Amino acid sequence: MEEKYVCLTCGKTFYSGQGIILTVADRKLYFHSKACAYKFLKEVILNADKDCISSTVKDVYKKYEDLAKKREENAKKKI
Image 1 (cartoon, rainbow, N blue to C red):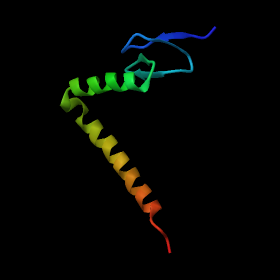
Image 2 (cartoon, one colour; image 1 turned 90 degrees about the vertical axis):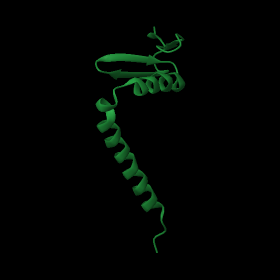
Image 3 (cartoon, rainbow, N blue to C red; image 1 turned 90 degrees about the horizontal axis):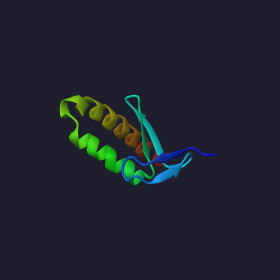
């Protein structure tokens, strides 16, 4: 029998293989959809201590900014 989970945000039931399951700080977080995961994580970020997460935000932002530059370079025509 499939394992059953309950969405942390809305309470909807979903089964293994569906939804989003994240492990953060040794705690499993269950979401039935990306919208519920987004709603929860947005609230976490907005309520987090800015000094605590600012360096992480900068590092991740830089990573994706670099990836965007690489995609742009790869998209240029090479003659």
